[in-house]
Length: 120
Ligand SMILES: [Zn+2]
Image (cartoon, rainbow, N blue to C red; front, top):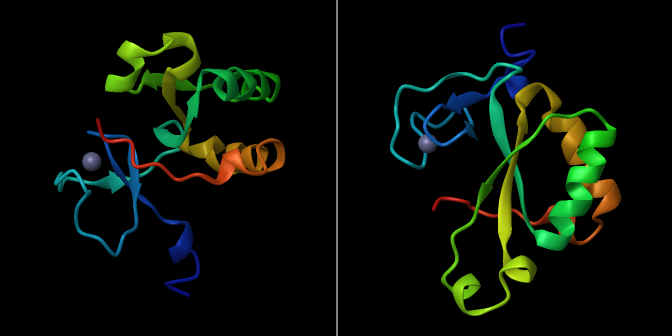
């Protein structure tokens, strides 16, 4: 069947590390040269503040899921305690995304489900 695995096919924007549904012709950033996502591609997982981020890093390390972080620039952080309010975007390899999402749901019952659009 041609569409047997259709739902598993995702396109990837190399400019902002986002997965794009194949129904869309371009990324929300406007980038059009999307390619199929590969297992090693870093994709956006979640945005976490300092405290939950530390927990998440612990969990990912234990599960041997590599991750990268990008700081969220927030005006508020300049006025308030940086360590408390600093937030990071977390990225994991596409191949480990499903596992990482399961871990999020398991460990962060409320916090884990937030979907943040992380364009900065
Ligand atoms: Zn993009």
